[in-house]
Amino acid sequence: MPARAELRHPADSPQTLLALAREREPEMLLRLQRLVEIESPSNDKAAVDRAAEFVARWAAKIGGEVRQHRQKHFGDSLEIRFGTRRRGEAPLLLLGHLDTVWECGTLARMPWRLTKERICGPGVFDMKAGVVMALAALAIRRESGALATPVTLLLHGDEEIGSPASRQLTERIARQCRAVYVLEPAQGADGAYKTARKGVGVFRLDVDGVAAHSGLDPRRGRSAIVELAHQIDALGQAADPAREITINVGVIGGGTRSNVVAAHAWAEIDARVPRTRDQRHVERVLRGLRPRDKDCTLRLSGEWNRPPMERTPAAAALFRRAQVFASELGFALEEASVGGGSDGNFTSALGVPTLDGMGAVGAGAHAVDEHCLRRHLVPRMALVAAMLS
Image (cartoon, rainbow, N blue to C red; front, side, top):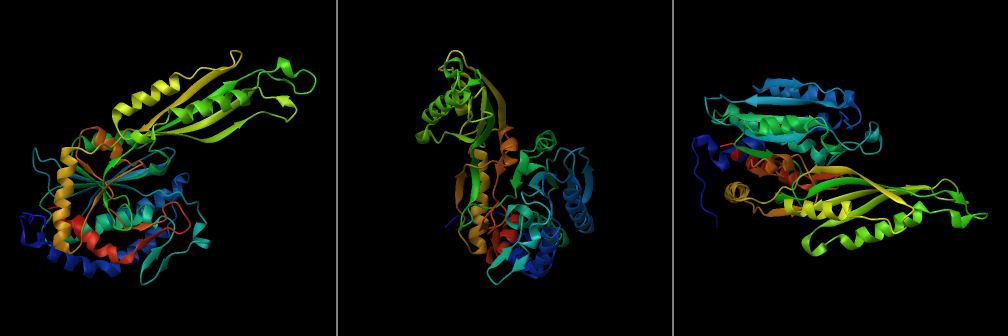
């Protein structure tokens, strides 16, 4: 049994927080329904901004100081501050996003649905439930007079497409914080917190060959498609499953007509690595590719979208603290290392202690069966509230 956590305020008691969270459940569900029904695909700035406006109004109502960071092409970011900031005191950062992978109109075939066991709807699991959990946790701590530490809630509108506009803002704010809690979905049916994530690289390989008529003059041609096939085979052999290094060619294309030797072909490559040093291995593989046919040329482009989030002693200490609170709330909490990336990769790479997967328990992220398990919503929100002590 984990040791009992030391708390600073009577309202910090996990059981008190759990009781307050239970009182909040009807309001949480109403807020969650409203947020899910404001569809917010990453590629629709106006839609994401409508979700941000809804969250900003709620945050202001519970005492948050809202600052809107305007973005030109993507949904705006919200920076919401809670608590009194004393000189030299670094805040906690709660991190999440409001954009989803679902296009507007998805509600027609995937409507909000609440049953005894499940909460369903586009974006409910990834990660609108986590946003609602964060705001509800802040509300109960503030109303109970137990928000003794400053907290910043940072929500973006472009996370699902790699955070192209918001990354610098995340890194700038995270550098000022003492720890980061990411409200992305928990891992698996048991709801493990995430203490490690793989780094993600997105690359493109272009192959140029020589076009020719496939019937009249085939020997004059140099097929870019054949050359690309050789390169794909080489990439497959360069992956290292034993070290959890994956190199996946996920999309390919090329050629113009079936009776033309292809002059051009291309492939999109997804690379994932668990450690920073593994990035160098993958880069050596990619930049070391050489054409088998000397009359073909290769061109590599792309970059690392997210650095690895490695398990650090500081992150492990945060997890042990959460594990203690979870035990006092009546459930067991495990940790996990996962292959997907989040904005927590950025903050961890800066050396800021980061704990991820603190949001909803469920399944079906980015899938038609996306859902949260209802029984976990209240205790998990109480755990987030406890971690704000």
